[in-house]
Length: 542
Image 1 (cartoon, helix red, strand yellow):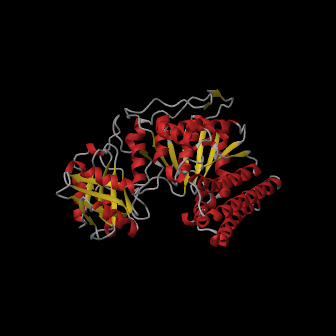
Image 2 (cartoon, one colour; image 1 turned 45 degrees about the vertical axis):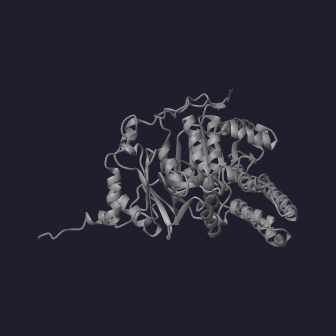
């Protein structure tokens, strides 16, 4: 362990691409400098994005990969998209350079950064044009392409901060896996399989070394953290920058990990669909993970694993309302299988203040006792675009091998199952919708040993989440009664081993009504109409 000479606690902030695209001035001139006064900061950046994820840098880079694999016929389109990426970043840099928010700073910072942006984009263009000749990119080559987005974002943020008097330095992590496990792909694959989640703890140690090299400058770290053996997008998914921020927090034993978005925090339901949804001051780590899995864009599950083991709280904050408290996710103190807190690779002389949330705070927010039990659910969420499959075992198929064969076919087709209910000779599966061709191939294979029925309409999964919800007497009855009252049919119900969620499959057309019914009847949060009716004057006598 290396002890730093600083006395301020560490704080890690992660900014999404949309936040950086919309509020670069606010982030670099207000939010980061204010937090830097009382903390040693680490800033993790996603790739710049627009108002829609499809038009963001990462999505454009994925288009570049597709065009590279189409061969030289797509050469002009490929060049145009790389130029668009370059122009978008140069425009963002120039806008900040000419902004009144930048009080001082030498112009050379922006000139050097603009030259670096052009150089990186031209290098990518040459790489992709060479790949077009072959018409194929390996998973590692795809990772190299994707990494450019975060690299450009960090270069811009570091330049903007430095120009306003807050020294910052970009930290690129695209080669960190080779540094940690060697350049051999076989060695990297072996390490990933052998270490499991501890693979990311090893990377935390490497990140600590990079942070130490920044000295007194704020490290601006790429959310992309390495060229994975089987592609970072395949192994982790689009939320990899959240996981990178968690590894940074573990690396320094951070007081808190902050994820800055364009919303106030976690709500009892999606406020765009349920107008009466309320902001939650806190949720447990288990609830946050479950909400993410079943449709709410809260935080990547692997992120929760890292900070839970290190006992680091996570706070979601709104870049449009920096003074708001947001939603804080405390790590559970009741997990029997949790290892002791991980020792930070870089420590400060300030003692950790991240231990256990005050019991009065948790009680005020509906969590009772040492087990943090709730007397009503915390939130309800919806996962759309679901396909429901029912498979009935053939008479000539042994029932004990039936489930094995079903899941073997799903594994071959790389189909993830969201929900399962089974009996001896019957299984129902809720999966993400498939392309017609993929569905037909899967159905043909399943029909070799069973009769397959595909639900004719689109489905959705409605999930009710609450910590220790299994212990709530009558909650299942309340959920079913609320849906029955709203005349909503249920196609599948799953609770199983989970202590904190009950999931139901309903027709997609009824998902919004189901969510509102549960929100009002089960979570006991009145609708806007009900709240207004409480203040309507009655037939008073004058």
